[in-house]
Every structure is written in structure tokens, then in C-alpha cells.
Length: 151
Image (cartoon, rainbow, N blue to C red; front, side, top):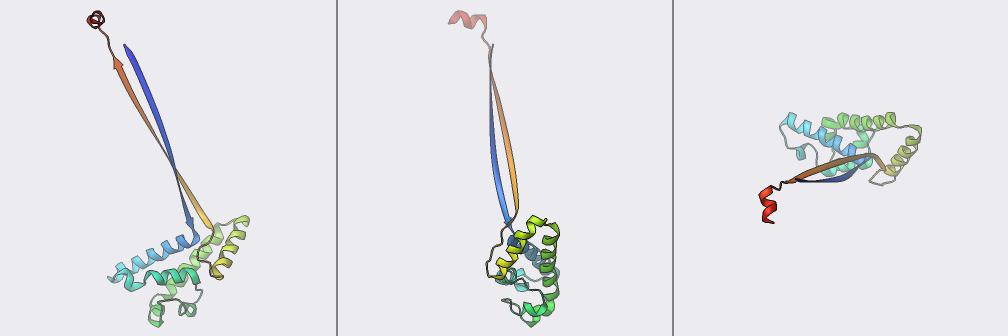
């Protein structure tokens, strides 16, 4: 009897990087989807992607600041202004609370960069996923007395 065992292990690592702008964009998209579902309107009627991108770039702090954002006029400002400002504030406040002293230097730099017109902030989150697959195969060969005589 002969037994052969082969084991193969494959490891693959995927790293996903999220910027501060990506996180705010996801939050605004989720808000817009909720508004669309509640009103029965398509998301693009609530707010187009270009408007969300301009909110991310300009980070408005007041309802009056919103009037400087592409796609927001008096009607959208009245309908959604407080909600948008609260999302931008929540995002900024939650970023401040979760940062350490070391992180706050990077965050201040990120905010300064955004004010200077830079559209992407430094990386804030990195997620790494590792997947390991193990395959084992066993082969068994049995030799009988008749097989031995034939050889």
C-alpha cells in the first residue's frame, strides 16, 4: 500500500484604501437614497452626483454656503440644507473625535488641503483581508499478490 498526500496552501491579501472624501461621499449617497425612497423620486432628482462632489469639495458649513454649491438653489437649500449641513458637520465632528493627537496633524492638513482645492484627502482607513485556501489530496495504491506475480 502506498499513500501520497499533497497539501497546497494559497494565501491572497487584498488591501482597500478609503479616503476621507470617499467616506463622506458614501454618507451623502446613503442620505440621498433615503430621501429618494421616502419621496418616491429617483436619486438624481434629489441631488445629482456632481452636486455631491461639489459638497465634498467645498464642505459648506452654513445654509448660505450651500448656495455656492453646484446644483443647489433656494428650493434645494430649503428642502435639504439643514440635513446636508448636519451630515458635513457629523462627518467632520466624528473625524475629530476618533483622531489621536498624531492623527489630528494629518486631519488638519487634510482640511487645509480641501480648502486649497485639493479634491482627495490623505488616507484615513486601510482594511486588509487575507484569505487562505488549503487543498489536500490523498492517493492510495494497493498491490495484491496476483498483481505482484504479473509484474
